[in-house]
Image (tube, rainbow, N blue to C red; front, side, top):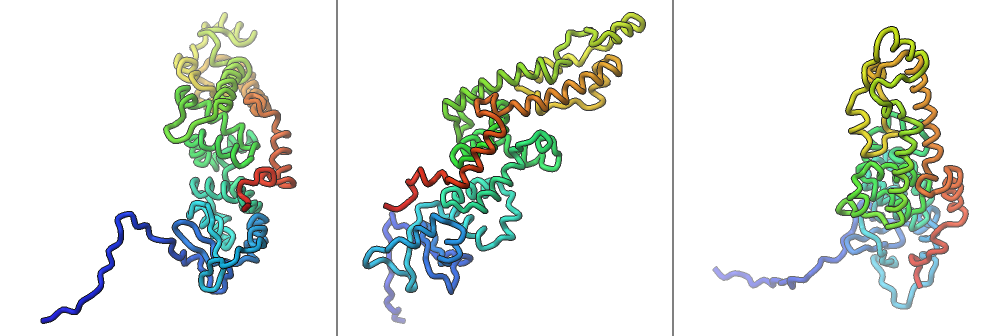
Length: 335
């Protein structure tokens, strides 16, 4: 039997497939194609122009003669990572999705690209979600509802310091720096294997750590550093004289907890307070000192890292809405 001849196309070893259509963002009534290295999206100029001044300016720029068309629509090459652009466009087209953004990597990408393209509503959504892990109030820091978000932020502390620096979210910096003080000194100095702090931020972190240690010893957790058997108040003096010495505080409290500052993150349980010894009056006094000491540390937290005050950080962050950072940093605009 004679076989039909067929043509076989042999691709070179260095062949790289061209970008493919991303069908979830390929709208039949779209009028502009955005192309990355991996994907093409057929989207709507008018909708994107409403959300992004940068894209609006890009769409209004005259195209060169003989521009490339795809299905009769102009093609704009985008310098962004494909998944980042897809995250942004998907969130614009699907408001329900943006209300349920909790994936950390998604939020990081969304904050970065929404800042770049000045999509202010998406940027604020990303900031609000990240703020669950980087709270700006002590009440939010203590809220058990978002403990998982805080744990995730602490696991990515160095990355978050760099991210909020890059995207101009100074209100999130104090808590990110506090998380960095919980890291081993070698990690602060050398990075976590993927991300590393700038030297000015390393210096700010180490300086802040020392100030937190001082606050811990003098303001919030003085009870942890009292000498064994030391009476805490005049009433305890009487009780010691009549009933004998109080039980000593657990030996490991001061020795194991002080390699990293705990003045905000460590609040003893009622059982632990009882184990420390002392009368009801002095226990109540130390609980009060801890409460007001933590509030004072939180108020001073930005200044401990050389960031000013909370009020100044908020003012700086929201002033950016009136004078966007990227007006002064125009690397993203076409020549």
